[in-house]
Image 1 (cartoon, helix red, strand yellow):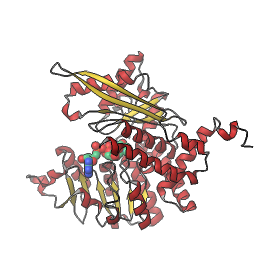
Image 2 (cartoon, rainbow, N blue to C red; image 1 turned 45 degrees about the horizontal axis):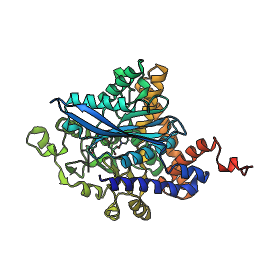
Image 3 (cartoon, rainbow, N blue to C red; image 1 turned 45 degrees about the vertical axis):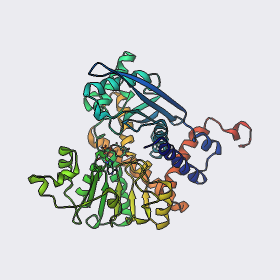
Image 4 (cartoon, rainbow, N blue to C red; image 1 turned 180 degrees about the vertical axis):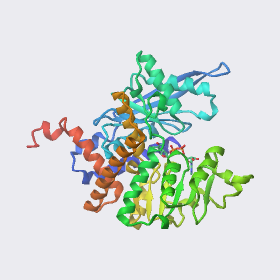
Length: 434
Ligand code: NAD
């Protein structure tokens, strides 16, 4: 993604705020404040490579807003990471934490790097080097990172260890998404997919869906996409199409998701479904492009890959009446208008994929308490929050006759607004709020 595209994602995100403002019943000062990140830091990270040479990487951390609690958001390792992109992602995190009502603000970080080109030791040096640079900027009470694209539990473990060494005390609550033996929470691995699944189950009961009649297409068969597909499949939903960066496969009768996930995770490519060999040959499917998957005649479309997949160019051709956004920012604001005009229901990213950050919050709570919960407790607490907030957003949507995204942003804005206004706004200080 170019810097201009990344900047556009940010301005697109801010557009949604403007739209939600009239339903948020908040002081205009709050809106103005939320158009700018609170703090951004750019660092350089010198890394000694395995061949003895030195490479310097650029990294960023943005704390967008901390009115409701410490910053919270992942760290992305990707060649296209840029400050505008990190800013947009940090903004989304602010709204997401507010929508699910967890006591965090929003933040995000990233390093411009292709991690696939680094050895494991180089990756560890880079991860630890990044923490050394941002150590004064993060902390359990200031800003709590987590994994994002191309970072994982082991990297979170290295980062926690480095931070703890710098502070000369063990501080697991500085970061979430850690391996379980280092203070990670049970249930974090499938939390994003599970949160989306709970949202879909709420729609199921409101719309009287019969799972066996529901045809579902999932774009992006990675962590989030696989888990939501697995849970829906177990309930009888027909997962008729899935894809990865190499392309999509389609079968009108639906796939056996566990074996598809097994193949994908073993081979790292869905395309391997077509490879030579017994397991591959047993899958009978039509091959499609990622674009074609989005336009399939299905009952439920789940974008779970990347930003900007549904745009003004293809929105007219989207046939699914319901879109559940598991990826961050898969629909542009222009596409939103087209889909809303057609009556498509979009369960927005800041609600649909908030299960991940919710269980990250549980991990932080458990770390601070030094007391760890069984899996059932994590699932039950996640279920309570997702159902409650889905209901709040759905009610606001119906009450105000607005789309679900605007309702989610309005709810987020109300909550952020309440926190900011509690410290006093212009109306209070000029004595006009009597
Ligand atoms: P992942 O890396 O595990 O999976 C991404 C999948 O998308 C991979 O299978 C990849 O091959 C595929 N992909 C990449 N480009 C594609 C394209 N153009 N078309 C189709 N497929 C493509 O990542 P993930 O953690 O599952 O995250 C997926 C999305 O969900 C991202 O937008 C991420 O920000 C969002 N998200 C994830 C979490 C989480 O906890 N994992 C939480 C919130 C949001």
